Image (cartoon, rainbow, N blue to C red; front, side, top):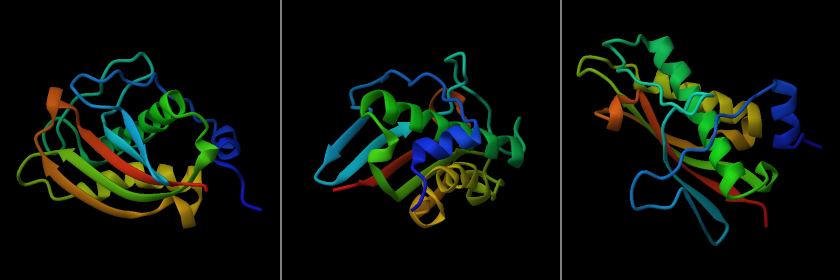
Length: 155
């Protein structure tokens, strides 16, 4: 039998930053039928502050990819805080990765791999990789990456 996400998290030695508080009129997450929808998350550091920077300007592609991984840790923290056990999640369904980048920076998919690779590590390759978009845009507070996602829950 496959390992539970909670077991993989322990094996990987992952630590989660504090879950961010909503800064607008929205819910951090919402369950509809058998799906868990997560609002856009930014990269929160362990001290609760935001990572900032723009890919192609003050961040290179590898630094931006690490920020996307940090968004994944932030999202897992949000799920655990506001929903409960990550073991209730069956699979990643859809990911929208938004990268704060200069107009000539074309490596958004590479950057968002930082998030996707973490999900594959936590939920396994079969269930941790869903459909995905990775786009460049301006992001609030000059954060480098924002990701929203949808997960399927176990019945």
